[in-house]
Length: 210
Image (cartoon, rainbow, N blue to C red; front, side, top):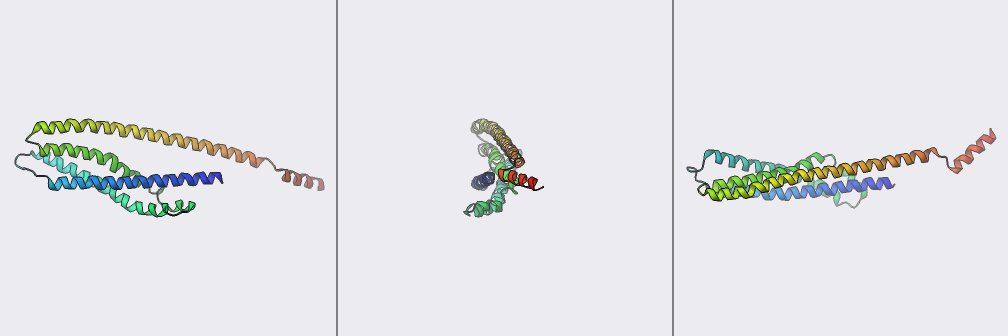
């Protein structure tokens, strides 16, 4: 019974974590994709003075930014209602009806697209936008680039360290869980091999009759 409760608690924890990731991905993707669309529509361009390569780089980066966030928004919008419906049910066994385990790869994909790739493309878009907007004022564009590039490098280092620590934490928890399951299996085997007093009495009674 205790083992069953621990399994149910772990399942509910994964459900709430998946729901939180989808909500964060939904909000972040909607915000950053909206910003990219506004920047693409409202920017004033002088096509005679802006280099063609810079225009192509800006349009490609902005398109990738919108596509990545729209993909994360699509995944979160499709999966989140099913998880919300289960999380609002006050029943311990209702967690088995949630698709958070079977769709775990899509949830992680939405989280990665919204937080890692989406923010990287967002910073790159800011750099390109500064060069497109201030192409006549190179010092302003250089200043913006000098600020954004260190932030981008720090973000990549933080993401790598964060996911390494997260994977190490999950591995440690999984190892601990396997050790607990092995100890419980050993205890069950030892308990099953031992006869209870009633069983011993019945066995001696049978032996006497034989």
